[in-house]
Image (cartoon, rainbow, N blue to C red; front, top):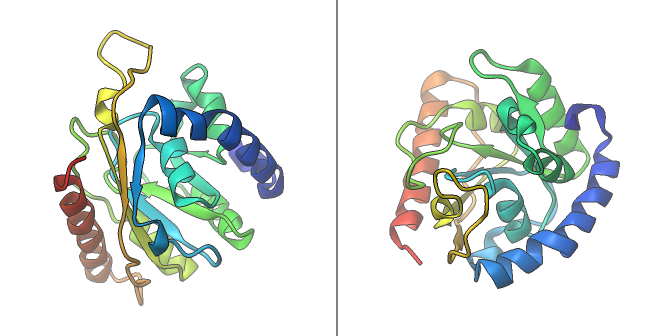
Length: 212
């Protein structure tokens, strides 16, 4: 699992996988459009927060922000053939459902200290159309503990990549929009974390409404 591998080794695998597979697929097969890349700080700790509608979202978003992003992925994804290997190449590490997973938080902090960004899906699971309806406070809590700003990212169209009953990704148009940085929470107070989480949600859903 990603938790047992050094971030430096993950970095080498990340670049190899990005340039050989993900980038060509995004720009060719998925006709990817990317807006707001100028909003991404290329150094320093960073929490990438996004919507989630497809198993393909982690490598696509990581490719678009143009810096390595280690994803806090739910442990079920590590049981999906091919996808498991793909997300591990992108530095993903498993997170258990339910109670806070201290091992995952420690792994996230380790990646941040090594120069990676860390990605978190605000709703924690996939949604039918990519919009966020029930955001969780985990990303804001991690940002507060790491003293890292949050970068809102919206991926539009990925819910159409896989159709029910089919394991073959469809060539559908994808659009990724990157918003402006949201300041680091000043504390781990529940109400502040909820307010920051909602601010991220509002920005991402507004970008999603822009469509293609």
